[in-house]
Image 1 (cartoon, rainbow, N blue to C red):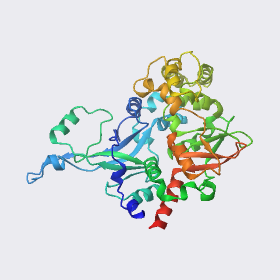
Image 2 (image 1 turned 60 degrees about the vertical axis):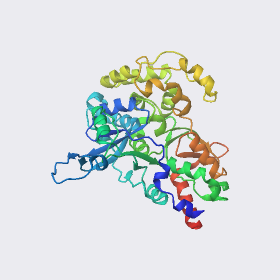
Image 3 (image 1 turned 90 degrees about the horizontal axis):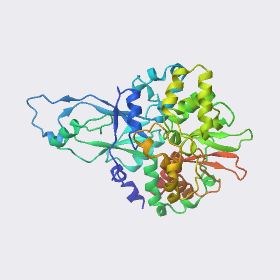
Amino acid sequence: MAVSLLAREISDLCLGKPALRSLSLTTTIAEALFALKNSDDNFLSVWSCEHTAKTNKDYRGNCEEDGCDVGECKCVGKVSMVDVICYLCKVENLLSPSDALKAPVSVLLPEIPGMVVHVEPTSSLLDAIDLILQGAKNLVVPIKTRYSSSSRRKQQQKLSITSPTIHNGREFCWLTQEDIIRFFLGSIGLFAPLPALSIDTLGIISTDYLTIDYHSPAISELEAISGSLADENPVAVIDSDGILIGELSPFTLACCDESVAAAITTLSSGDLMAYIDCGGPPEDLVNLVMARLKGRGLEAMLQEFTNSSCYSTTSSCHSQSSSSSSDEESGSSTPVSALQRPGKYSRSMSYSARMVRRAEAIVCHPKSSLVAVMIQAIAHRLNYVWVIEDDCSLVGIVRFCDVLRVFRESIEDMA
């Protein structure tokens, strides 16, 4: 049992995963913003590549096998709409957001070492878990696919801002905490009785999380929020009694657009939750944001906000509990931008509203079983679940990294 798990290689978890779309380290934030809006991914990888052609006359290698470039190509981080939004909220960028977007995408990368790590496809599953427990959020794994010289030339002829990163004939993919949790969920019977134990019994409820008061200005905690979101941690929105009202989640904000920066600058945390929820902000909040931007003399941001967030006055959010078929039928009446967005932002308003873009927190009870929490998180495409008591008071949070630590210890005990 333990032998079969220990024998697993990272490549086994990468089967069928799509190749990473990449940005150059020198790409501007404006170009990255355009790429994010035209991508189905919430994150885009950022690469530092230095390729030079092989001009050595003594070289007798096969270009189709080895590639015709030499040099280092390394993923140095990833960016999402969350990074762009938090960047535009900084004081120095409020007066001229258009100028801020001219900066290179490198300024968005968090100064946290080890968040993105390159690994070989032959690395063991335990090696991957150890890297995640040490702080890695994404592992970059080569895909075992090789391009011929002719196909590589065709690929280079149609390069775009987000071209696949190809180095020595190989592409790469992400391996995330969710991928490993999904793998363990598929082999959950091997760990009995561990999956049936409560998260309280296992001691994996963390009290290390950020909270913000429902009525406080969202901008007042910008630095803390930015740091938390950069680390892919949510921010709990609570009332004065410690009751969990909702959350500001990196996964929710990643499905918004840059106009949310204006909402963070002007709204309370509670109003911000309403603004980003249900696929489109209420008209009264849009008007409130515009009025406050004008009142604060932020004319440039007001112009950017007006250009990117002219919402129609159709009906507000639909119930999150409605079925998928009724969601599809009602999608046309969901508020959408009058200026149609390219890429996923014009395609996925109704999809995001019912699957991702929601400020409602996903919660469990301290006595919930480990497997129940894993399924709950996977079902909502999250890497955490909030823990509350019966009166909705916040107890803590269970993160995938803590779950992985439990499985790591269990495998050691079985070995």
